Length: 70
Ligand code: SF4
Ligand code: SF4
Image 1: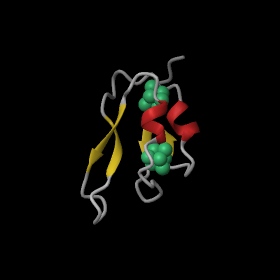
Image 2: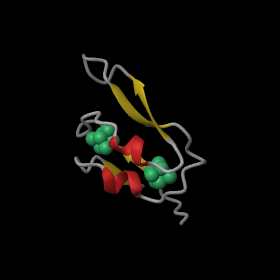
Image 3: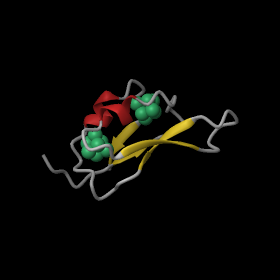
């Protein structure tokens, strides 16, 4: 399945659980330490925009509904 929409992560709702990263069949989403919060937790980042086929699996897996396909 190929979809031109890509996942966009709403960090205000993301709890950095990493489920989206683990569920991506193409390993497009990686967890990376950021300065998003004061704990410097590792948050998901769409690391390979072009490899992502827009399957929506990451968005469906997110328990916080923090991923929108846009
Ligand atoms: S849409 Fe599919 S391929 Fe793209 S990051 Fe999410 S799970 Fe991976
Ligand atoms: S599954 Fe959702 S809450 Fe968990 S790291 Fe990914 S975007 Fe954040």
